Image (cartoon, rainbow, N blue to C red; front, side):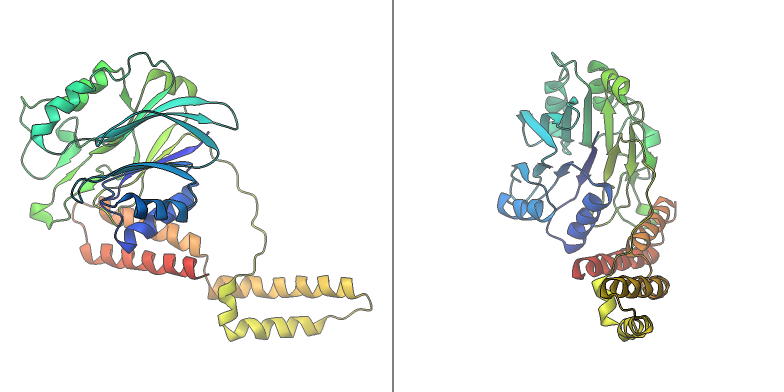
Length: 340
């Protein structure tokens, strides 16, 4: 199967947001991506879509620079659109390699109280006449109970339970998650900090029957107040050992040239082909340990710092200075990847 990515990016106008989006799509090899609150017109959204290798997309324009949805996909899937509005995009996705078909509905629930009742009533029976595996994901702008909120005004016992009613009417269950408990925060200081689990993935019984190994990962929050959702139902594969690769960034270090000159001169035979390969092997053997000391694996560093950032953001008392330092370091590493 494939990996899905869902994120309230809160605008595609910031460099850090674009960097994080690029890293997410690269690191998780997502074939399908949904973004809400793009706050950009189609021309700019399509520029970014093509930049990250998604060959097709469909967008809902923002209203007065607010809101905006976009859905992107790669050539390994076919997409049929059932319905779209400023609040959700409803699709049927077919995976070309194995013929699997599933329904995916991508949400950006209304944030204003005046709009909530009509919206949730209008989709109360969204599952009618669709018996295939179904997943609903995105920013629902709703929580189930007080366990999904920290800080701010306490929930009223008699408040409308829009999300729970929607799940009950459509026979949906929460798939759960790995990572940070809350998916949104207002980024205030401790006494004014509010955190809620607004983003999630819901599935029907047909989905669970088809893909028991499904999981949702809350990735680190970078460039937005929301955490991205990585929806994964692909069993992990054992990685083969990585082949040697000469990196362009090494050329900027004089020591690289010195190592090559030294190793290339050591070996000489009458057969030019054998000599060439022996010299290449010698250079590889010398460059490999040097490069690991001089240029630690950029991808491993990015993954390590992202994990550290997630831990910082999961603390009750968030160290904003440390959070900012880690975000800046990630931005520097992403710049380094783009340069080379």
